[in-house]
Amino acid sequence: MGNALSEWLISSLGGVVPEEVIIFIISLFPILELRGGLIAAKLLGVKFIPAFIICFIGNMLPIPFILLFIRQVFQWLKKIKGVNKLIEKLEVRTMRKSKTIEKYREWGLLLFVGIPLPGTGGWTGALLAALMDLRMKKAFPIIALGVFIAGVIMSVLTYLVPGLFGF
View (cartoon, rainbow, N blue to C red):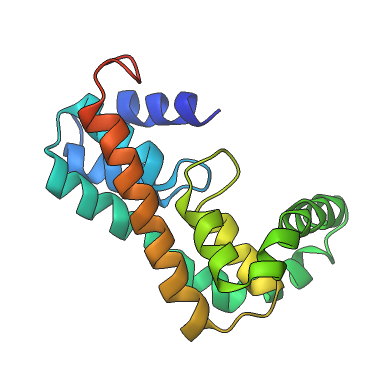
């Protein structure tokens, strides 16, 4: 799903907006985040340093809003028939991932966000932190460091390992 969305954004926006804007938009999306943005950056020929900075900022931009408002948004969405089941399912799925994080707290959240695996990242880390009542001033720097670590890992895989992602 992530690759298809990235490819659609690249084909839809390519030639219309600068490549840097495309990778910024991709990095804003849940699931894609910085990881998808860096892959798209490599495909679009964006140099490493600007790509890393743009993707990092794009990935981090939604995080404070998630940390501050997601519980209120979920409460509001639970009042909408049909949507309430989806939100409850999302909360249950997310909280299943919280067992390790609860055990190791900050280190668990850092590793969860920093290791670029499917279902991990800044968005899910922020959602977990919010649902676990971690305060913004504690959760935000941990998530930022985790996104940075994921960015370093993805940069090595994307820019230094030839042929890994088909380019």
